[in-house]
Image: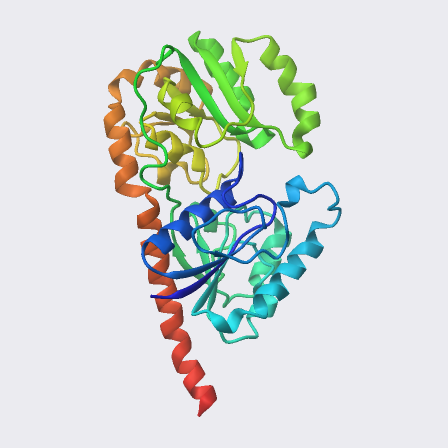
Length: 355
């Protein structure tokens, strides 16, 4: 049994009530580690729910707190909050980007950070390159490309609890619509999804969040587009709503326009037996198996052609592919191997200091 600290982002609760990829992954990992018998403490917002020990540095998710104007201040508090308890753990696992690097490089407890976001910004590369020996976990091999020489400890793909999202019985609209799930922003490619839907003559259902940062983009470019097409905008949905939404879809469209580090919605669809049609960007070729979990395409025209070939994809096979590669248990086991290596590597250093 390991004493493990999981340090989550503070923007959403763990698990998030609606959208929230990183916090959802932290929740899946934390609960699975507890199920495996480890002693886990979760540092997260006070409105989080977990079977681990919850120690909240902040009372509620930042997105729900209208009084927060400087979120960086809360993260500085979080770092010091964890530092004061660091000696109580065998390993510290951060999910808050570069914030731990300086402080935790100066203490004895082994630590590792999973990077959940993009690395193709020069300022990020400068920060990470400044700490080349800090252990990092990538969520896909493609995520590493902009910063190949930092302290990569492993690539570990995300996982979902095996029974969280499952294929549902046939719905009244089974196979009569295409699905778009996640967040509306320029990099997610909603415009391409609408074009694919229009070209195939199949209705598009959009279950997506609109962040405040993307509100102008949505109001000026996307809302008028949705009004002129056969699109049903549902808004954000929670985990309880996803099985019916994805099981009823002919396919999930993931027409991304950026180097997506992972793409949690793809494995959520696979868990429900829903084929995915995804553009060949970022992690997509690693996560997808062409012809098994759906199709990997390069253009809108190829996506339209893939829709016509969906009958060749076995939906039960899509679910089996998820079970083979993307469960929370597999993810947790991969992380435990990293923890054990870090602990073993730190032990000789501590003995040398004691001598």
